[in-house]
Length: 584
Image (cartoon, rainbow, N blue to C red; front, side, top):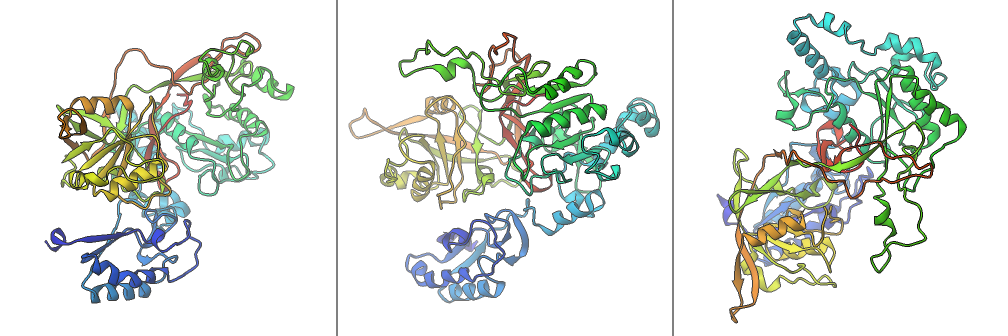
């Protein structure tokens, strides 16, 4: 094949042409800049250009709106055709990067789903973990297991419906904002949806920058047992997308308190709690809280709401906070605790309030995600930032096998940082060794994007950044123009890989230049169940004795490194690992 014998010059056009990071809708023929470089590219001996995404997209190119149209920030289809003509005149072939397994929120089919919801003919194109019809399908299966008809089974569940909402609507705090109960009802899975902070019906993450943490938690709690199989039927979510809620057949009432107007404000979440109780919710989950240590008693009007919880069957669980423990915050430069720091509490409000049910976090002992293996089959689940809008491709794309069973690569393990403090590459002298292989470098001295670019410049197929201290790192590669995959791994994992590698010595026979070995990159996700013994408290989790000397928080649950729904991606197509106080 001609591609195997070609020398490629790769261009990330949005960056190369200095286009705006976010699509502004203005058509500018920036792509024609490439024509000015055609002679230079040919002079380098390159006879092919590989364009990273050029299709119309929301921002970074991989969140596509239209696969048939060049991004307006780059120009028109005619502009790109002119560029191709110039490249061809210089003997240069053109290859386009097409990522057809995911799209952006502006994609026409997803916009149809947003408008028509479950009646859209394109709904099966997306994995929607809160799909109402998938929820109904699960109820049918449960009814069959119970030897009942679906109607008989559903009647025994007392599910929330429009009529029940209408009956209590006059008593809800939002009654003056919602004249018709049907506006609150989406599906049997999502029977109630309202944005308390913006006072509207938008419960998506499309129009604010408050993050997708709430959707992630909602997935942990109630993501469906089944998802669409894309063929008009349904398949088990655990087998298909590796995500199923703890209570997959529960209804999900969404009360958004982070939005365009900011959040979360006690005036919003306290009245939302009150409304949830009125609606008969069995459990209310608040994954929010102040960053500083909270008081134990709120304003009287809010404390009265909490006091009334003792008279209901509703369990209201509230995050203890992500401010770590008192000793972590009070250690001075000598490693000793300050004698004058008497604040033993780090839990934020409202989790610190009386009658709240506070939850701390332990780390998940299992892992779900993409991995690579080495040595005798040891598996490493890594952290990939390819979904963050940077230029790096997903590490899993290195698996070129037809069935995703894995592709073997040689690796070169360096104990340096890949680049020095000035961003100069430390791998220049090892280009022949690194070319086409996976290069391991360490965190420290230089920025992550400088490491990424140094490894790419050395000709590596992918970069692995090893942490130099305990914990997980999520790298910022926003200034990198390199496109090779770039991931990070734990310090302990790096040490294990080194121990399984072969050292390569300098001429003196004692100085180790680098280590080598082989690893296999898998294009399929997998799950590691971890240990079933004790759990470790998450290092970010708040806990401690508040001013009233009560025990806070009351319980702890897995919250560190949980794989669940990524609400920032259109249609519930994506899933991600996040950490935080995630009450179950």
